[in-house]
Length: 414
Image (tube, rainbow, N blue to C red):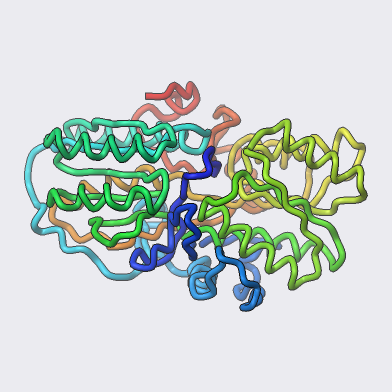
């Protein structure tokens, strides 16, 4: 998944009380999970233990260990509905919210400024349509902060002052800055669902997120090191500094690279394909590059094209489950892995409200599966997403929703 601004903090898993996920750019530590297949990290259930003396402010050993375990943990719930699965843990009693009749939701969204968020936004709106038809929700008033903390704080305060919200759904742009606003929403005594990115409070009715950033780093770096040898060079392409889940991905990966003797050099790209191609081309001009690691894969094709332009053999590479990478991976036959930051999570907040308004318990911290796509699974996901645009994410989980597949194919933002 790509985020387009340094302030944004993606929810990485970890205990809400420890602010594990969605830490802001203020240097908070800790985060989340995944699991691949053949030649992937899941094949080795115990990832290399990173150095405890590395002195990286973004690294937290306890959460690294937790997410490493969660990568291959057994999730509760129907595996055909991963957006409703969760890891066993404390539950929230919602009997006080039990009510009848269709309810209005107020959604404060960080942004729809990249393909991952756009795919999720489409899916969320189709889930809304289904719940409106079922008489659970009447409407969803949405305010888009366009990746601006101050704008999102104002949006939440607007909803509170308006007083017409039966529930709040919040995807924070960053952690520390949004915490007081989320607490003000909680003070209304209405249900509050936080998802994707976290905040520094446990007041939300439920906090929903995939396993997290360390898990991504473990999966990807373990895959690369299992296919490379000591002394090989890896170019690490990073979108932005200071975003917790992205920093956690790199904090985990670089330790595994170091433990295996891999020479990894990292560069920030802002997700710009032209910059990605330039960086890779410059590194190739210095000598051979055996691997490419990415903390988000929607610019992966540009990296592959740099090898093609230089007349070099393809690297061992990790991208993401965006369709452009899956298609390039399939076409080139390169040795790859597609890590996932489960896009289907955009359905879960509204389905959580369905349970909350029915007085059913929900997980206090709702940790969703986060499983990479391996070579063995690639053809299945390519077939399932045939006709979807390159910016679409394979694990969006909307196949049973109204409008499938046309709404996602046309990709018109609601």
